[in-house]
Length: 336
Ligand code: DAH
Image (cartoon, rainbow, N blue to C red; front, side, top):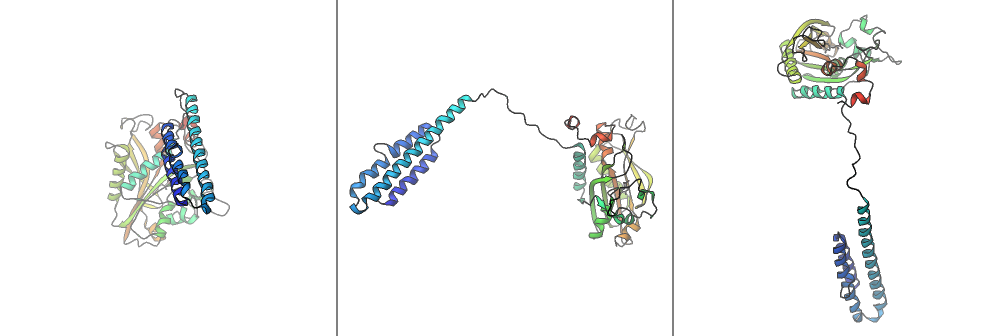
């Protein structure tokens, strides 16, 4: 017997103890190591062969081994006993604690749904800052210097001379300023307007901007993409129509209506008996916008569109007051 033999037995014991998951197997371990004919007793019986000069040291080691193993067995045995006690005190028939699950805000949900459709159609997602420069928010988008949208009445200005973006369109020119064509992006985000707060308008809301610029992009591409988007979002039977309109950054410009998804076009209070709902503005990117970002407007053309998320969600859910989307009233939010 050497010190290594003792260490080996200690190691075997630890492994055996780890495997003992119930009182019966613990009892077996105890018997195997600490029993009258167990491994520890076996070691003691070999003491006679130890030379006198190391007998004292080996004896000490063996006694320590025996004490440690006995203590470990006792501790484990207590742990089993108290676990059993505790188990007896648990009433398994009591109901569990309810875990309240959160849910996505309807605006977040709508944006996610729309973005995933555009991603499937090959659009990348881009973001821009909410505090914009006058240049990106207006100038680069071909707003003349005295355009009424720049009025303090409509736009929030920051003390440092920035503007809280009034639409997501500045992401178009920001993105094009740092990327070469082709670009195909959608840009979701918050926009701000200094409007009197009412059931119909709030100081902030959400838009999704779209932009596709490449060689030979035409109005037919715009129509095809929007039509496909509407089918995927509203269902395959939806009808769409384009109405001529005006925006400084597109030429020609249009507004898009979809057949009312509530009445199917027959006429109802949501579509105000017209059968149509306006969902977005769009058009062919004005050459002045391409020039502003240094693109060759002879070579490239593109389309853009912008849709208002709140309007969409309100129509979908039959909400008549936009403010409820911003109050975070759990009674409202819990319905989703
Ligand atoms: N920026 C416009 C707004 O806030 C919406 C818009 C219209 C965006 C036409 C576009 C577009 O990209 O082509 O009212």
